[in-house]
Image (spheres, rainbow, N blue to C red):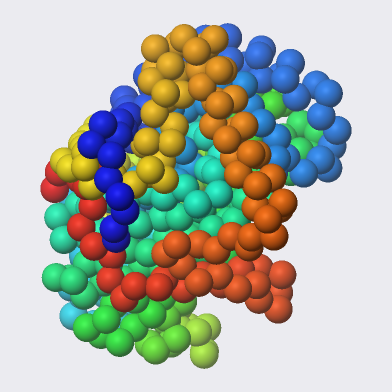
Length: 384
């Protein structure tokens, strides 16, 4: 990865989304509910909100690309490497299930990251794990990710498109696309889907993850199904919106091997259906509590397209709650994006991603393949 460097290039890095403290707690605003409800009064049910632009008061000080990346590299422990350490295919799939759950992070009502601009990138390393993301399409917004760990022989490739729609009393954000985890030393590939994000305005404002997640390994004929849902309390009122229930089973026969139950923000247990033994599959407090933000190790290695560079002025203003400055800085980013698009249209230039090959598939989705076989070390790092 080479580019003519600018020594004074500046990046603003903020705390990741974390179970305790972190960005979600730092930027919670007391009057956010009233402001969000007022903002959406004029939006009609069924409206596609893909191109809807939020004022900076509703933004987290980071891009959506950074949030995607953080779900991979910001974690306490080494859950991803555990996937390759399993001695049996069942142990490895079980570890992949735990890792999949660890990528679900808490979001506060009324807060959203910046929409990435076309060609925006995010490049971070954690130990021998190198993660690279690129915004490969703007209309519709499609993000691609490639992560490699040469020591653990693990590779992650995904291409996804978040599609939000307003349903009157809520916004449902469906994540289209596929995440693939390759355990190279075992010759196994795992296909993973992700839950949808529900943003509810009435009767009680809040956010929750919902829907069915499927994880499948064709080489081992093993599969997992997880249902993210609300667990109801007495008479079906209240309850915890972070419940997870599921199973691990054989794809061909449907035979259930393990049962899964719990809450993604606390503990999730797994039961061996043959022996009856119950064990802890995932502990959120150990995995995603009190996470530390990335640090800039090599300023001269930053690309001009790096998320932390593109949104530096806006993020800094949002952190300082200087909304006038944030509004001006955000408008500057958006106007530059529109100008570049107009210049390409005028010259007939066809834009192409820098790090991925992108093709539409027959289902109306996208397929992204990384150009390089491995991701190089990044100028931004996370402590192990």
